[in-house]
Image (cartoon, rainbow, N blue to C red; front, top):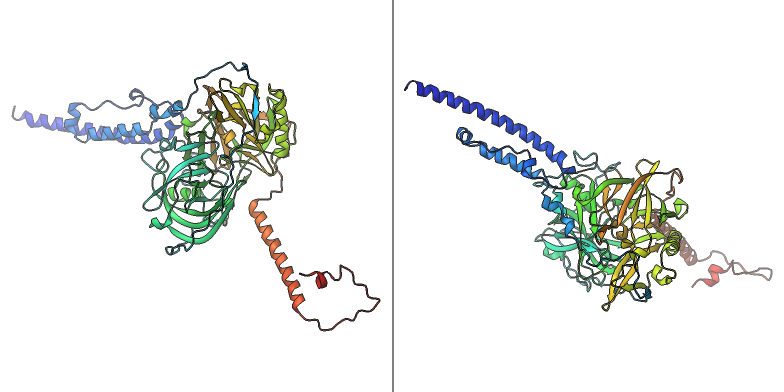
Length: 620
């Protein structure tokens, strides 16, 4: 027996070593499977999975643990990796916690009182603000540092490795990209915009930043303002570097002037890590910060062509793409459908940087090409009201551009299109007479609070050209999105505003429309995507639709004007004209100051008229 025991022991140890090697091989293969699951499972795994569907092997037996004490740790790491590649169900159902309504009524029921427009001012929508004086005796700034410039290249900036297709449907919960951490990272409403919390400087200063896809500068309040609760103080940040460049940005409503600098930022509900970004501190503003807003700055997410003072200044998102190595794509969801546009509370939303979060949309994503990389300019083919085509030339819808802009509150239409839409809505609605002040935004329409007026108005549809130019698709918004509750009078009246306005220079798909959809800004592939948003509901019913494809045989092959006067071009032209006028004026002054070498003696035959004596006798 003594001779047999060593032999049995050696056989047992050999069997354990063989089992250890087999387990390690399984572990290596499991790591490969885990990597594939992180790439493949994320796009379609919306509802989460339980342990039974994870494919996690049962824990080792006691004999395995005796053979190799490292196996339990290896298996635990493998299980954790598999869990990390799947979406927890409790995080997927975030949209079920949105506000709900308790009153349900038949769609065609009318209460005793007829709808009666009431003239109500909008002091909280577009009030005038006084100029804010520039701080006197500014303290000495830290030594200037080079401004972050866009990488010099003749072509568009290259995307991060592995992001050639512009899509990032799976994220690494332990790495830079964690889309679940970005879900519901926005607050706000369509009346005052949606904002993201951001930490700026060292030590960090917390500010709320308005998300705006219609501009390209990142700017924050740099001095106290009556209409903002917080501001960024560069003196308190050890990492702030002033560039000494003055920046002025004008919007369709409001403007500001500030100084360009750089500092580090972090996003508590965004990308992990800190990044050095160009930031403008606002020293003066007019009609920019409005009473009641809860944000303290603006995050411009458009292309660098709109950046001020020049397109050489690297934009916020371009800096993230370069420093964080994320795909050149972001997506946006704003959840305010059917809710008061400027109530005391706030609604939710999500800004996903670097990809697409599957839980934020239902159905398919429909893409339309980006026609020009300045704004997110798209091509509108036609509009329908209540299923009836407006029968306008498609170029009217794109005069002189059609853009997707989260920083614009309403759906803005070119004047001719706006008039046609108003006439069509008035003709197809169940209201025989309606005050013109309601359509122009100077009046509110009020109904009994038990009444829901949305059943009285038609659906509005916008047709966009598909990536396949011979096809189109349409995004439709129900009246719950463009007949917007805004004010309660007493105990019985709820007042609404018209969520569409006229524009002199663009069709703007603003928050009125965007609240119905999950919008993808795929910069890598030059396209904008639309999908139905799960939070676009009112009284439990969806308020937005996407349908297609449709043929484009009945519209022109190109609805966008071939001559596009971009804002930078207009600035260049204006400066050139001013320079020319200055040169001419200088020449005239020199001519006036040079004494004449010979004097002409006028005779009776000389005729001196106004034209010949304009400079000589009329110069003041």
